Length: 619
Image (cartoon, rainbow, N blue to C red; front, side):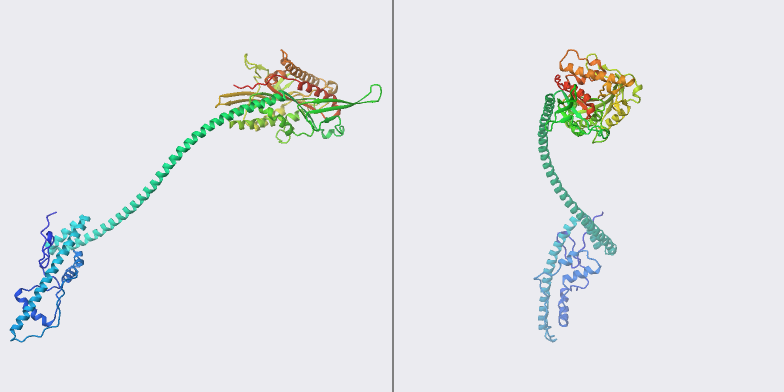
């Protein structure tokens, strides 16, 4: 931009100090022009008598100037130019009478007074002019400060003002430019105000965020302190948990030891006697149970009595009593649940790594199958020992899982019919591959059946399905003593594999649940042909079972396991390292007194046996 022309003087010839714009000498609208000194007195003399007119003051002059162009280039000037207190007021008073034409001396005196008044006014105007100059300097300083704040706009305003003074002919153009600049200034002010407002809002938000950040930092510090405390507490809790886990493991081992000790004190071979109830179709033949006596306060005693007559006459020789004592005696009214509660602890030993064998012995029709399987395995009230034992095993495995144990189960179901093994889980058991009992290895005493189907199971429901399949495939036949007599030994085995990865412990066991075929006397069963062969095979295997138990009790060097497929298959579950329980089932009918007496005598011999201490199969 070209250099600005020197500022033109303001009206009245007053120059602003500091090089600012000066007051022009151009006439101001509404203000009187100064007359020369030689004519001033005459003009005043002529004007005073007519009317005392107040000379327009600086405020009026400035106002007239500001309103002439419809704009105020110096807005602050009109405000600051207001008369201050102490400024001389115009002299007013009553008009003097006109002197006579001959009174020259008086006229001269009046003119002198008028001249003095004019001089006083001039001095007052000079003072007012100085005040205006001072006010102008103040306004100019304020203007420069404003121009500093709004440098861009002020520079252009100064340029327009200078050009307006130099080029009055371009006043309209410059006025329009000034108006444009004013609009822009307003826009800038609005924008600045908006920016300031946004800045204030941003500062407020920043302060709020800073406060929130401070709160979050404080919370973070508290959280870190709490986390450190919780970490220390967690470490302490982990240490306590490890100690408690160790204590829990020790308690579990102690529980197993004490549990095994209790079972040993009860005897590794235990015998329970169960008398089945009288069936509805038998009530006419058996009116009462006078030949069976149950002690009211001792549930281990059973007495059989029978009246005998003299051989030489009809004299009664009195009742003959046969006293028996077992680990537990169950009268006819005993439920399946009450019976199972007595063997539940023995079933638990299977999870602890002990071989467990539970079998039912007795004559045909004495309730062995009812005790072991129940009439319906799905009925929770009448289900037998096998489904109840399976349920407890899976429930116990879930409880031990909380202590770090993992269990796997496989189930097998076979029958021994005429000394032949049949897989009851196969589609056609009678036509299946021939099954033989083999050793697992040459250095192991463990036995297995190579071609026998072993089904992995994970729940009680899967085992119940297998039981239904086996029940449908089992060999039964009608005899003179039982319409539906089991003609084979039925063996259910649940193989259990346990592993504790934390302790690196393993255990393996077999839970064998056996429903033996019913013993029969040939003179009563009247078996012929195939039934006779079956009866002979059943009685032979049961006799071998008794011989094996006696040999174990007597600690004989040779145990005749191989004399029967039944004892050979159960060799691992009958020896001193296993736990065994025998149910002896008897009929409540007095007509079966002899068979019941034989069964109880055999059970008494078994109950008197004492085999070695059982050992868990753990590593």
